[in-house]
Amino acid sequence: MAGSKQTTLAKRAEISGRGVHSNQPVTLVFHPAPAHHGIQFLRKNLADGRERLIASRHDSVTASELCTIIGDVESGSVSTIEHLMAALYASGIDNLLVEIDGPEVPIMDGSSAPFIAVFDRVGLVRQDAPRRFVKVLKPVRVEHGEKFSELLPFARGFRMTVEIEFKTALIGRQKKTLDITPASFRDELQHARTFGFMKDVDMLRKAGFALGASLDNTVAIDGDSIVNTDGLRYRDEFIRHKMLDAVGDLSLAGYPILGHFRSFYGGHRMNVSVLHALFADRTAFEIVEERVGSSAMGETRPRVAALAFSADRL
Image (cartoon, rainbow, N blue to C red):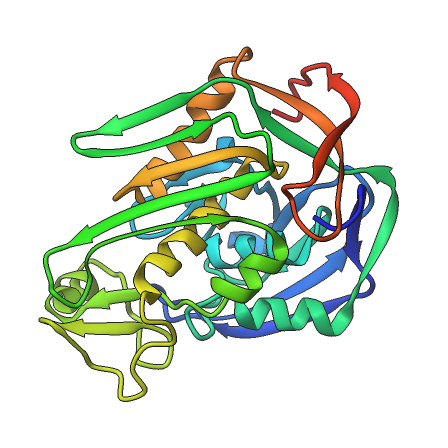
């Protein structure tokens, strides 16, 4: 994160599209927000004209199977937030009010790039408040069968090691390690698209999912082949998209993470679960204010001693 100050957008911006699961049209309006506001969604167009404010935090997550959902169906929810949340991280945005008039963040092209382009066009302003980070102090791990996700102490910023395995020669077993910074995310992850298998389409649509999925927003896999005529954006686009998703999910910590995230075949549920495990143990983390070099998250040093735990923020 460039500099040690919190940031927000310089002015209002918006973007429109359709949800990949609901296929409903939706418009997002991004409003600048004050320091310490965090990222919050204002869900509009609910029954009886109601609105609901939902914090983008791990304890707001109510489902995380095919996507990450905050809030609940009865009182109002927002689904498929992960690509947008990753874009906010990559843009270094700490405080924002996201007004949304439908139940699902638009899928756009299946990556974070369209959101980043909007934020770049508007620009940011720095605020008179230091940026805060979640510093991992000891290992925490969650497991489900052979799957696992864990957070480990790491002295040089935010590192991510993700491994996936699929029973198709097109993907097979892939593993990638990357020191995650806004610059590295933009260079290596932002354009990686969501992907799915043609064999699952009918089942998903009968269950009410993937109604808005198309070759314009999803890499479609049929056996060992890519259906999309334009092919892949990266040779290893699949693992890169899984890392993009993990950046978005882990941003639900409420602050950028200083630590090493590792996962094998994790997915949204495991990403969110490891945050629950971290915050369930108050000896496993501390909230710090860090002075961070503009070139890389690896050049971090404590600026202020650990802050006291705040129940309303964590």
